[in-house]
Image (cartoon, rainbow, N blue to C red):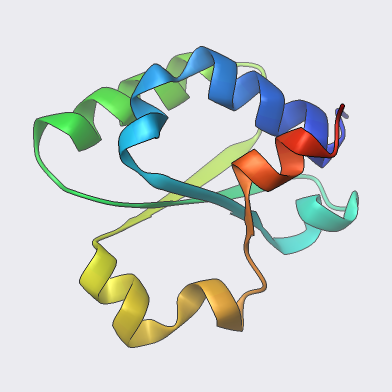
Length: 97
């Protein structure tokens, strides 16, 4: 399986619509263990969300992605990013350099 950094680089390169969202990885994939890759997308709903979901579906065809989407208000209210120790895809991608 690819490293968390390699996956982040792949997703960011393959999904241009992610620039409109905050994208995170969380769960066991961040530590390099586990069989699936948990991704959190925080941002607007509507057509932009539909577009990024399609891009993620294509980019993740060969990856066991589990994608969770939240509006910014939900992410703030639940404190999901902090509670689940989410790491931004851009931060993970920098670690690959």
